[in-house]
Length: 95
Image (cartoon, rainbow, N blue to C red; front, side, top):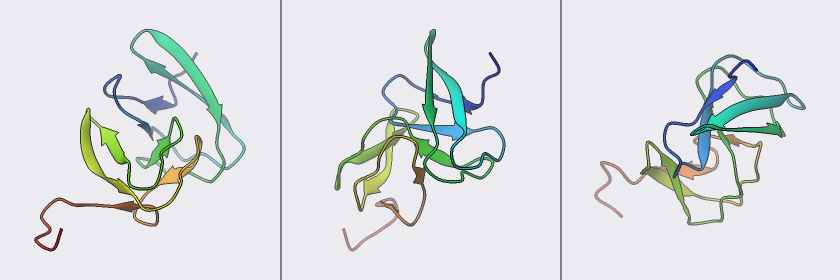
């Protein structure tokens, strides 16, 4: 199986794709030694993130087992995770 997305840490709720993938593609990735797959609900460009589980509004988005922001809307597995549904809290003095 060719790895199509990378999960850095088993605590992560997003994966990063290693090439452009259109909506409907079934992608494969590993969490530790366990292989997983899911169908993309949206186009995901190279280097961007997708949800690998349901992420609730206000829930931390985890990459490297660290919060990279919070979800601003419900994000379903296979959806693109980017500035349209993630709000960063790093470097902000208003939050």
